[in-house]
Each structure stands twice: as structure tokens, then as C-alpha cells.
Image 1 (cartoon, helix red, strand yellow):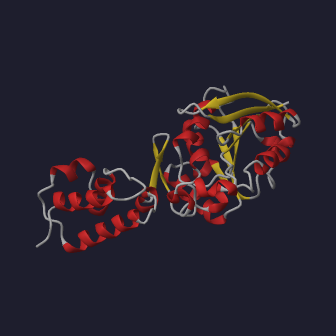
Image 2 (spheres, helix red, strand yellow):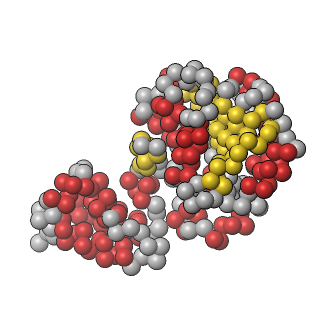
Image 3 (cartoon, rainbow, N blue to C red):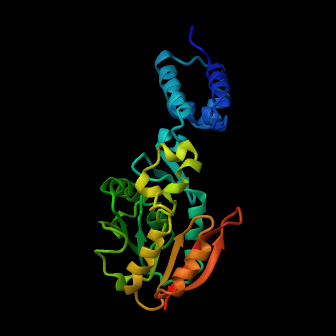
Amino acid sequence: MSPTIDQALHSARARLAEARFEPALREANLLLSRTLGWNEARLLARGSDDLDDSRLARFQGMVERRLSGEPIAYILGEKEFFGRTFFVDRRVLIPRPETEHLVEITKILHLPAESRILDIGTGSGCLAVTLLAEMPRSRSVATDVSLAALRVAASNGRRHKVSERLDLVAADLGSAVNLAAFDLVVSNPPYIGRDEAPSLSPEVRDFEPEEALFAGPTGHSLLQRLLDTLSDLKIGTPLLFEIGAGQADFVADSAASSAFDLEALHPDLAGIERIAQLRRR
């Protein structure tokens, strides 16, 4: 006899509750909603309905993937960022709430309406696409060393109808583009050192792409190279990039010997200095 929706959810929640990485029990709802193609409200309202064998098997397969540690964003194939839903898979880093601060800061910079924006290390394209959506007369060039990631970014550009204003370039940092053409540079570069890998959650360490996470032994080397590479920006161009916990002093010291002035270090909601705001001097 087939279980009801409520019975299947109860069983899945019990299994999730036993997982060592403590996933949210609501994830069972999200996985079954995706299986059925329903929203969560409809799922909860139809709890007494039977779940047929094929859909039960699909749901159980998704639960098994989650129990293996695979992030739910990869299982669902999407993640929300700044109020929009982005396609994600294991080719790209999962967008984080901390990165939304880059968008918030950009919006108070009083940039020209027709700004040209460079997004370095675009990954899923969440930054470039969001800024284009928020600034409908702007244009963006988004770079990444990963062709696979650029394909994901392209799909998100199409999803949010900004493809005509988004140019995707396979490049290392800001190479292969005319830096003097931009009014703003944003980046969420890799900033985790490989020596920190043991401290990461297995959900992150074992599933998200290494090249989007790790930047050398300590995580500092790429940040220094980013500043060096962008020295050809025109004077006055703002540069915003995300940094890791404890890296603020390194960024301040590096900026002092670079072509940039450090204007501010913005904290995230946990109080960690997360966004470095610089300007080409």
C-alpha cells in the first residue's frame, strides 16, 4: 500500500533528524514539493493523498542524496539570491547571503545609469545578472576561468532576461578585457586557504567546486593578485570584493602598497568584515 504524503514526509524528516550535519527538517517539504511540482502550501494541504510508487522512489532518491551531504541547492537545482532564483549545480559555487552585500553597496555608490560593470569570477552569474536586473541601463562583462561555470551564468542571464547586456569571457581575473572601460568592478573570488579545508563543512568541501573555494595555501595570494591585475582601471573606479574572516588586515596592508585606496570594510550580518570597498587612486 502506498504511503500518504504526510507519512512520506514524516519518514523523511526522521531520517534527516539523524544526519550528523543537522539539515533543516523543512528540507523534506522542499524535496517532496519539487518531486510533485507543487508549492509547499499545496503539499501541506494535501497530506492525506497517496504517493504513487514512482514519485515515492524519486523523492526517496533525493532524500538519499541529501543524507550523503549533497547541498539541497544542488538537488533542487536552484538557489535564491537577492530575491531572484538562480540555476545552480556542481559546476558553480552556491550563492550565499553574505555576497548580497556587494549588491547593496553597489546601489549606494551613485553610479551612472549606463554603467559598465566587470564581474570577476562570476560563477553562477548571480552578481552580474542581479546588478543588470537592478540597473536596467547598465552592461556587464563577467569573467571566469571555468567554461562550465560560464555556461551556468549564460543560462541565468537568459532566465532573468539580461543576456543582451551580459558578455561572458573566459579569462583569469581581469585579463583579456579593457579595464579602462569599466565604471565598477565586483568580485567574489576564492579566498579560502587549503589549510582551512579540514574545518569546512563536508557539504561545502566535498561538493562545491574546488577552484571556486580555494586560493592557495592561505587564501591571500589571489586577493593580492586581484589588486595587481586591476591597476589599469581608470582613476576613481570603485572595486568591491568579498573577503574571508580575518582577512581585513591583509587587505588593508595590500591596498596601502597598491594602486587603490581602501575606503571601507563592510561587515556581514554576523559582524564579520566581509566586503572590501576600494577605489583606484
